[in-house]
Length: 303
Image (cartoon, rainbow, N blue to C red; front, side, top):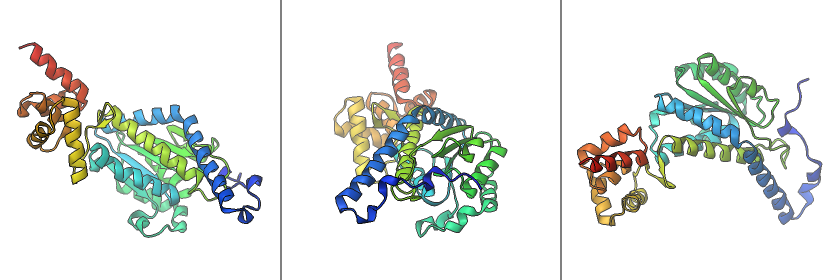
């Protein structure tokens, strides 16, 4: 008989929890959430390594692929949908391979977690390349769908990153980079939407944000590659340009109009760069605004 995953273990501290007062139950649940964040803190070196590998994949034109089933798939879905808008990543470079597919928005089907053949077919359907990076997420590290998909990804030559809750997880055997999120036994045994889910969400948040930083999409804590497709984000883009370039809001808006809404280019335009040259400077700086500003300043010094 295989060893029971740590996420299935029972913690004696929670015996009789169903008889406790509401505040005591909530306190126990909160302690589990805090334990989850502590587990993420312990994994920071591995998260850093994974983020740099993923950023390199995206820089080379590869894709970031999220692989998962059940609750971990929900964590993957949230991260994958959010980062293109927040950081302006090309949506074509972000892919999802989930056991429930598009049906995940309606319900989770536990039977699909066991379908290894479906995972292999789903991975093969997106034609992975060596430039791609696959993040496989499983609380127990034993989910058949996720394990089979990760194995297929590695066979295709993609960089594989595994997130799981135990260092003995089979998921790590197939991963180029393993991230152990040792949250231990859940308050409600086996309910990995609790501590394990929180740890997964936090780890993915940290990883994808660090990826964006390394790709040049953050400047002084500002999202300079934001996809401003609503009034709130357009106003944010205007404030960002005004703040970095040191110009009034009206000038920032005019620069954004000239740049077609691109924040990095708008900053340069607001600083006096001709609109026709702004995109070239950002490209020469490989998307890093700070370097593009230096290039513009250097060009002015040479005049």
